[in-house]
Length: 116
Image (cartoon, rainbow, N blue to C red; front, side, top):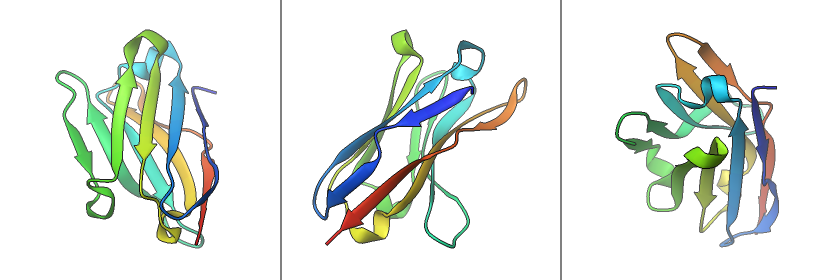
């Protein structure tokens, strides 16, 4: 697999989790990398992205101020720090890498469950 996520789990509302995504070297430097969130029964939505050549980031409105995306180039790893979680954040979080040369790649995802 070219993208492998970890770090999900069960957490109480108000808690934090940090997700990681290890990318294969051939796609780690994709133009855009980020995280999607898929709530139960819903389509995936982008929650955070980071772009090469400067590290510009974008966030979905509902996570701004709570989630932080970052990358560790020495480890080919993408991170998602999630703070102040609430039950509405429950779902499968998967990372993606998108580039004209390697296409769109997605990981299998990791489950995050937030209980009140």
